[in-house]
Each structure stands twice: as structure tokens, then as C-alpha cells.
Length: 546
Ligand SMILES: Cc1cc2nc3c(=O)[nH]c(=O)nc-3n(C[C@H](O)[C@H](O)[C@H](O)COP(=O)(O)OP(=O)(O)OC[C@H]3O[C@@H](n4cnc5c(N)ncnc54)[C@H](O)[C@@H]3O)c2cc1C
Image (cartoon, rainbow, N blue to C red; front, side, top):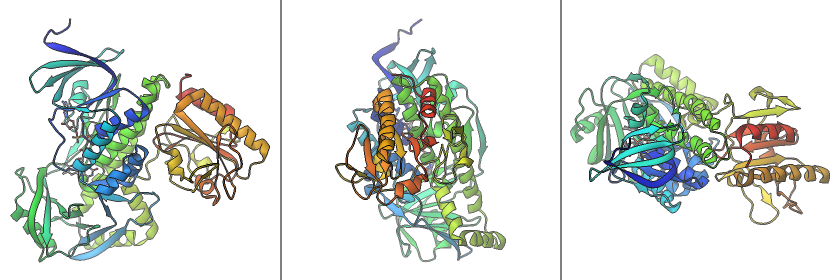
């Protein structure tokens, strides 16, 4: 029976997002760009003015680039180039972020409040406004949809009907609790403090992060407003840290440095937990609602935003009736594994920060002296090495046989992230990079055909055109050939030249090869030689016929 005190909101939607933090906003933006109807609600009256996460990582910047928001965050942020580890007054290791395999700086310092502001403004441009002062009370999933009840600032209750509900409502998620899901893990002992302060007398380059190891550990990062963020142990005291306390910790590590002004401060406990499931029926979890970790590796928000990038295109296809609901099963499988890596990484960083002894210092110095080890550590830290090779929705075919990751000696295996390359020169218009070609809410079909003869060109453009006809706007296709300049004629499918062989090299196309890239930038399908039957079988698994 309907509760008479609850006013039904007649504006039904495909996806209802609870929580307008960075994860909910990223999901809403991704869905809006897919053309899905979505609404996003938050219990707070306005965006949070305080900054918790202070860094965006390379992989997250790639995600934001695909959604058209990277330029704005880059303009508001500060590029961090070096991380220096100091133990007992001596520098024991320096990691440079130069040379990582991404078009974006490894780490960008930007307050979480600025990231949220930029996402919200892009979302508004896409026609979606955050509905504030609506707190989720409960919901019912009746397998045809979800009815969620909210409480507004005037005390009124409203019921919103949606096809799907996604809980992006943070670590104390009401959605997760309502589902009765376990949130197992551990709580680290003690309380930690963050203090953002203007500091005099410390010749600390702005793009440099310092980690002071040991029981008296202190992490010091830079912020774009000229402040430094200090992160240190605060014992069991949950009161806000005082300036004198921060000054005392700072002085022990940087003698002579003086805090001129404290701009932001907070005290928090640290947890490492993950929800037992990320999806139950028509309800899903993303971000802190599903997993939480120590901020010491700076991955919590970044991992959550990547959950949203993974979920947005899948939900977008499902609500458009272009993919079966079973596609959503891959969200939990892929992201639980990736978020598990984020949890381990932050656990290691949290544990390492507290260690300082001669053996540990020397081991760290020896390990990070090798440039390959440095590069691996940096790329792992900014989530460039995350892959979905084990997922059931990625596939490879080589010479007519199913091919796992080991079958591809060069270039990405199915499930790997596609890194940038280029230039690519179209028949008309400006040259573009691979990143430009892949950017957007669609899948991208590429056939790399070297110096293809006329017959091969006709065959491959036919394959691309048929696929685009079958899938409509959800896929764009291009034939890429090796030529010095713009190809002579377009034919039915777009054709581009790869004059420096950079794209052929990057994708490992030693022979004619076909690649289907997902909207989140990971390789869905690879076949060598391009196998139209295998592609059809793959598409039949992931997509529904229009
Ligand atoms: C001190 C500190 C430093 C950190 N540093 C970093 C860092 O450097 N890098 C990093 O990647 N991560 C960092 N993190 C973690 C990061 O802040 C979180 O991972 C991130 O905020 C998670 O985003 P979210 O959108 O999932 O949740 P949140 O940001 O918590 O947003 C949840 C939203 O849901 C709303 N909400 C909650 N309940 C309801 C309800 N019942 N109804 C309606 N709305 C509701 C809330 O008002 C809120 O707006 C740090 C965290 C802390 C505490």
C-alpha cells in the first residue's frame, strides 16, 4: 500500500544517482554524455567546501579527458613532478614522474572541492542539475525498477522512480546498509591529521612531494593555492589539529620552517574495507560506498572515479536497450579486482610511511635507484597498470583461435588500457592523435592495415561500415593505413594515414589487425587477421541488436 505521506515525483528516470561527490558527479557526466536520462541527488545544501582528496592521477585525467573535462582540471591544478623520501634527515629515494606512458602528468594537485566544482559545471552544461537537500531514506527494488524515498529540507518525503539506482553516497553509504551488504576489512589504529597551511622558511619546490618516513611520519604535498598539505599522526585525539601541533611536527622534519596561516584542517580515522558486492539486482555501488582505503597513496577518490567511468558506458547501453543487463555483471568483476589493487597499494604506502630503519632505507634506495623500477612504481601509483584481462567481456582471436593475453607479443592484450599515439592524418581536416579518435561515449573499431592494397581497403571498409550500420551511434570505425600523407579517398568508412607508424607500433600491428576499444579506453576485442565472424560473435555477446 502507498504511504500517503510520501509525495510521488512523476519525473521518472533511467538512473538515479545518490550522492553528488566526485564519484556520483563523474557517473552522471558519463551517463549524460551517453544520452541516458539520469538524476543526481544529494542530502547537502551545497558542494562540500573542504578538500579531502588533493590529487588526480594520470588514469583519472585520461577518464576526465574522455568526458571533455580534463582541460579545466589541468588549468586549476598544479603538476607534481617529484616525490622525495626522507628518512632520519637523509634523502633515501627520489621518484620522478617524467616519462610515464600517459598524455597527462602523473599527479595533479587539485583540491577535491575544485574537482567537484568543475564536474558539476560540466554536468550542468550537459543539462543535469544536482538536486540538493534530498536525503535517501530507503528504497524498494521490485525487479522492474527502483522506488527511492527521500526526505527534503522542509521535512517532506518524495518518492522517485528509476530504472536503476546507484549509491555514490560515500563511506557510510545508506544504499549499502539498506542492501545489508558486509563491508569487511580493518581499521588502522589512531587518528590522523591534515593541515593545509602557508609556510615560510621552507625552500620547498612547489611541484615536489616529501614523505618523511618513520614513527613520526609526515607527508607534505603541494596545493595550487600556494599552501602545503601536511598529513601526520594525531594519536587518538579526534579534535581538530591546532596550528602549534602542526608547527611542532613540521619543525622536527624541516627546521626553520614556520606556519604563517592555516587554511584548512581536519582529523580522521583510516579504514581499509570493501563491500561484499557492488551490485544487487537494480542497485549498484560506486566509490567510497563500495570501498575505502588509506589516503596515503592518494588513490581512494581516483579509484572511485574510475568505477564511474567503467559503469557509465555499461549502464548507458543497458538503459538504451543496446546491451543486455548481464553486461552489468562485468562492472563488479572488473572493478572489484581493480579496487582491490588500490586497497593493497594504499595499505603498503600506509605501512611503509611508518617504517624507517637502516635496512628498510637501503632496500628502498636500492629498489628505486633503477629507472625501470621507478617507472613501474610511478605508473602503478597513478593506476596506469590497471587492466581487465580476466574479464569475461574482453576477447582475442588469432588465426581463428581464441587468444589470451600471452598470445599478443606486442601491443595491448584484450582488457588492457590503450595509451596514446599519433599523429593520424584524415582525408580532410586536421591531424589527430589516437586519444582524439577514441574520445567520446562510443566504442571505436580500428582496422590497422599497413600499406593495404585496394582490395584489402575495400574489404576492411566494408567490414567497418557493416558494423557501424549494425550498431548505429554506439560505434565509430576507422581504417588506418601506412601512408606519408592524407589518404586519397575516404570510401564508405573513415580512413586515416599513420605516417610515422606510431599507431601501428603502439598497438603492435605487425600484420593486419582489428581492435575494438571501449568508451572507457580499454581494449574490448582484438583479432589478427581481422575476422568478421569472430567480431560478430563478440558483438552478439555484448550488444543487443537495435
Ligand atoms: C583526509 C583525506 C584525504 C584524502 N586524500 C585523498 C587523495 O589524495 N586522493 C584520493 O584519491 N582520495 C583521497 N581521499 C579519499 C576521497 O576523499 C574519497 O575517496 C572520495 O571523497 C570518495 O568520493 P565519493 O563520491 O565516493 O564519496 P563522497 O565524497 O563521500 O561523497 C558522497 C556524497 O553523498 C552524499 N550523501 C551521503 N549520504 C547520503 C544520503 N543518504 N542521501 C543523499 N546524499 C547522501 C554526501 O552528502 C556526499 O556529497 C582522502 C580522504 C580523506 C578523508
